[in-house]
Image (cartoon, rainbow, N blue to C red; front, side, top):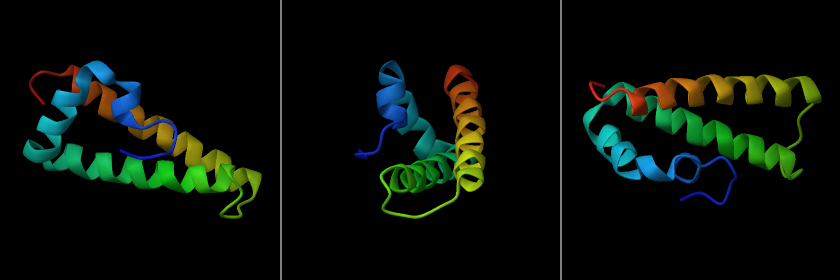
Length: 81
């Protein structure tokens, strides 16, 4: 697991098994999951001032993270995904 906040397993502790299942059985979910985690790590580096970025860039990345998280949450809730 990541040390960055907003880790999906921490945000959806009741869905850890479902996350694991979808990562191995659903290529679309796996791609979105990887993209979310990479984006989350980037945002964490920006917030901790390890990686410089202007406010507009940071907000853009955060909006993208919310969008990805919404997509992933919908897939976790959909038993047919």
